[in-house]
Image (cartoon, one colour):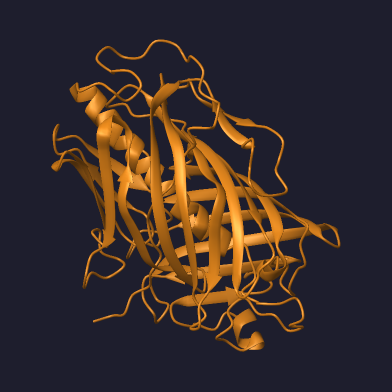
Length: 392
């Protein structure tokens, strides 16, 4: 049996403290308001909002891990992206436990890197292919153009493409242009996920990474996003806004893995299709975050949530995740776990259950790369999840 990679799914969020979300026009009849309704429409809405709320933090953590150096100190002169591999072998794309890393990228672009993540440890079944091109704007700042191709298992044609523009400041950089986490930095990014050539998800996020002490960084972040195409089933579009305004930690473990621990608080939004947009304010440079930089304009609140997350990554790949008794709108709760014995490529590698007073409302299951299905038990409705968010 082939060994398989790990990247995980979970938690995301938006902030109750986050403003964004004014009136966005009339909603379909029976939609319910503020996440308190009990109609079929409102039950489906709440399940979609909870799933999106859960996917954002883990997606953010995975993006952060793919954007930073694994070096523990700026004093290490020969930093390498993957500490378990010799520098020359790493940069040349040698397969190492299901990961290939190139510098420059396979197209030979200047100031570039390329990271390929595979479903199998032998690097034969491609899952994600990410190219980043970085440009220094000063000795402590750079901009990054990032393109990530998403592949389904045993499928050589990309199922989606995520493009991002990132700005990193207050940093020291390793030899591949990655900011060194131990020294702290700030990062902001906007991105789009396109499926079949159509922009489907639009999002933005910012991270303030504080300098490390004894192997642990404190951090805070915020993010917002929405489904551009919306759900034809519900006749609505959905969004999220929130984050970790204070108290998050990223800890380097003895085996070289890192663990992100935080409670994400946020708000889900709904609007007629076309009724949401991303709003960007002043970026933050320190924690706590008093005013999130990324919010949403338009729509109405579909309820708030608070999601405690513990996620462990190694070489940028999610290894384990715990979300227990997250609180959602309308008195719902959420629990998420990794299925014992399941391969990361399994569609039920990560499972989540949304309940109310002990009764199941909905379940979702995804593989280690955040692709799967949300099933609303009470209504029978099903929705497709791609790259940690509901897309249709």
